[in-house]
Image (cartoon, rainbow, N blue to C red; front, side, top):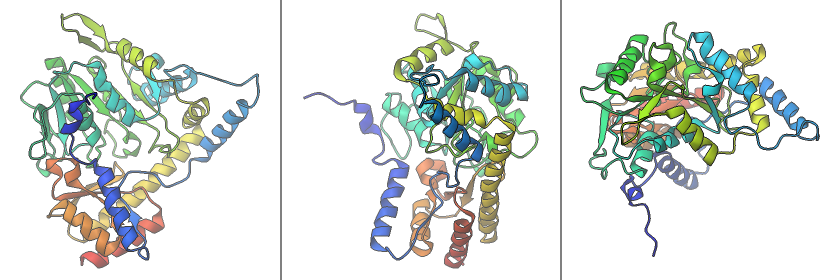
Length: 407
């Protein structure tokens, strides 16, 4: 009988969001008369911006005519989208990124999960705690860790993110090869200052490390001076890969479009010590395993960069941040210490008790779904994450239920 990849047996029994779904499904089956409001998973609820809908319709109409029909497109993405990304998302910030350094994909989760394939199995990894589970689980699958013990995997350098450091970890004393960073952070909503990111770039340059910088939520940054891209930091082109998404910026969670930036100046060594272009390696992987994002979806993504698109996506992210403000104010009024919600669509609350216990309490008493912090790592215990992605009416109803259940 064929053997499985034994590394999969090291994974914890259930993926966080699958476990949440199981508990919610069981509650709904037992209490069909009690409608549940979901403020857990970070899925958007509002319609696509009108400019994106118009672009989708126009591009679909093009597919109906031989003269404008398109089949396979460039795996790396159409030039019109890559050029818009480079110009508006990076060059406008003073970040020297070129269109050829952008790789369009169907989601940041996929790219963040797949990037580790480029690197050796015995790398030293530094990963924040609490953390987006995909960073950890994909490296477990790849065999870079031991078996889970007391909620952590041997072989990883954990970067504790706590109230003491404002949920922004500093570089560790020990050297790492790959470092996962996410700002604005999922799950905590914390943001990193220019000085804090500069310290990470200096660390990477000192140790020959690569920073994997997940900027999926950069469109929610409102505080002046907070960097939107790692490439705003001098020297980052030689040590960083950045991941971005249209999922939260423009509501593309069901449409699927994102991109990864790998500068041509980023290099890594093989076992013999020879230098290789990481850009070239990813291009080889990308073109081997991916057939590209559909033309209509890329046209919709490109519409985001028009004046109408910028105004509409700003209004969309402002709407979710309005929800976040209401949630944070309500939790603070109930006596909970919170961060996030000002530059991110997530609120991270210290609930001073077991996080799964608090999850069940909210579900049972208020029919509100949150995300237990323990699912994001050991440092998440005692916390919950609440998402601002829902309608205003549902958020207001959920907060009224919370107040009644917790007072």
